[in-house]
Length: 507
Ligand SMILES: *[C@@H]1O[C@H](CO)[C@@H](O)[C@H](O)[C@H]1NC(C)=O
Ligand SMILES: *[C@@H]1O[C@H](CO)[C@@H](O)[C@H](O)[C@H]1NC(C)=O
Ligand SMILES: *[C@@H]1O[C@H](CO)[C@@H](O)[C@H](O)[C@H]1NC(C)=O
Ligand SMILES: *[C@@H]1O[C@H](CO)[C@@H](O)[C@H](O)[C@H]1NC(C)=O
Ligand SMILES: *[C@@H]1O[C@H](CO)[C@@H](O)[C@H](O)[C@H]1NC(C)=O
Ligand SMILES: *[C@@H]1O[C@H](CO)[C@@H](O)[C@H](O)[C@H]1NC(C)=O
Ligand SMILES: *[C@@H]1O[C@H](CO)[C@@H](O)[C@H](O)[C@H]1NC(C)=O
Ligand SMILES: *[C@@H]1O[C@H](CO)[C@@H](O)[C@H](O)[C@H]1NC(C)=O
Image (cartoon, rainbow, N blue to C red):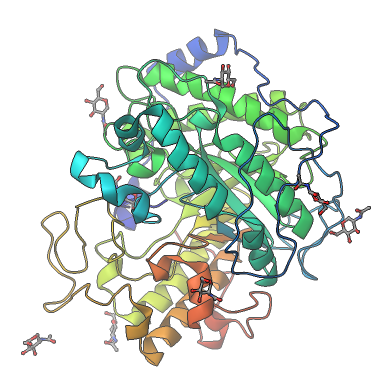
């Protein structure tokens, strides 16, 4: 998930030109043959597996399902008739991503198959004295056996069938599922990740999604070398993807993983329930270079389309804006086959936005974010927000990384607190939230949804957290600052407050 975004007007000034170097890198890449691997044994077996022991409507699952047995393939049910809600077509009916007549309304299943310290601090806390800061160092510290044991238990319990029941009951129709390349194995020497473990859990979850009519967008969040150097890519530190000594190799190594994903999701077993696929989360194009990231995405789209059976087949493909600003992508690959643009919008990582008062933040969501999305939908095509939250402070434990502090109280990066007495004390404790604060957050949720629904839709970050409630959709519903049924939110917040919607940017 999110990272620091620079000032917006600065982003808009970035313009990139295709360099000869990029052409050489791409030309070299095209001639390297891709190894076609089909690791996921889809052979039918007579052993039917019980994917879950839970068929009840009980949202409080104290009895998690048994771990996935790797020797037993998970068999797709082939029953794609489920419908999440009256607003959403059944899985076996088309979903209008192109026209946007039905919006994607979803949550991220973050902190699951790619770990994030701020979502599940309990997995990291015992090892922080040993220098553990991300999934890489966690696996390195524990070693393969202990890491496998820890992750197997986490994969088995963080997302269960009850997760999907609750998501369905809240009126949502999509989930976005981050995965790391290590889910598909083929690691090189020195990469400490646990290989080939999480994919089975992903497939089990897809069967639950199918059962409740929820569409799934699987997205590569961790590429070899790290596409952004942030902890949520798996490895904190350098960007060694396109950038860096192994950058070209790592960018190429990423493509066969996308090939595997596209082959898998294009198959009739999964095409209805996985109609959309994220090619790569948050490449840091400000470090790597916008032209290089664009050239890579273009190449990746070709790989995804070829693996998926050609034009018109296989999943929708999603690109992330790379923090270049949506306008940078206007006119990118015009006429491309089912390509969607994703942007991540957060108040608390931006020094300007975090200092605005609440009225100004609501206005900013309605006017600036709303018109950005409207403009991009016209100038690029289908545009959605793959990550957002109601948090207006960055006080969530480990949000900025382990031991890095908070912008809010001035303990992050040597900055100044947002106001002289700003404190993070109580910020993550919902029992301290006043009715006014909860009403503001509800308004902010509704304002953002109004903005995002000028495009293809949205995914909240995150479905839940261990202890950072502003980042948990489920906590927001329980606490009264997120609607219980997102399909019945009442009149548009933005329109009702005099902020017009569907307005195109003037610049
Ligand atoms: C699987 O589920 C069926 C029906 O609920 C049950 O009869 C059977 O015992 C279960 N098998 C296992 C291995 O749990
Ligand atoms: C869920 O179960 C736990 C343990 O039994 C209990 O402490 C908690 O109150 C329950 N939560 C809900 C929402 O029922
Ligand atoms: C298919 O799934 C739907 C919705 O979950 C269910 O109502 C129906 O009974 C299932 N059909 C079969 C043949 O299992
Ligand atoms: C993981 O899966 C890959 C295929 O993607 C396979 O080549 C490799 O041998 C597997 N590795 C392990 C450790 O099972
Ligand atoms: C760590 O990840 C969190 C989200 O999980 C993100 O907000 C933060 O910027 C990241 N920090 C670093 C230093 O990678
Ligand atoms: C980009 O790669 C160079 C090595 O070529 C490295 O020194 C630099 O730290 C990398 N940039 C980032 C942001 O990691
Ligand atoms: C909020 O900020 C805006 C813009 O700076 C300002 O015009 C407005 O008076 C402020 N409102 C409150 C209630 O402080
Ligand atoms: C900050 O705290 C001090 C001491 O508690 C108090 O005197 C002052 O009024 C506070 N300032 C603001 C802006 O709330």
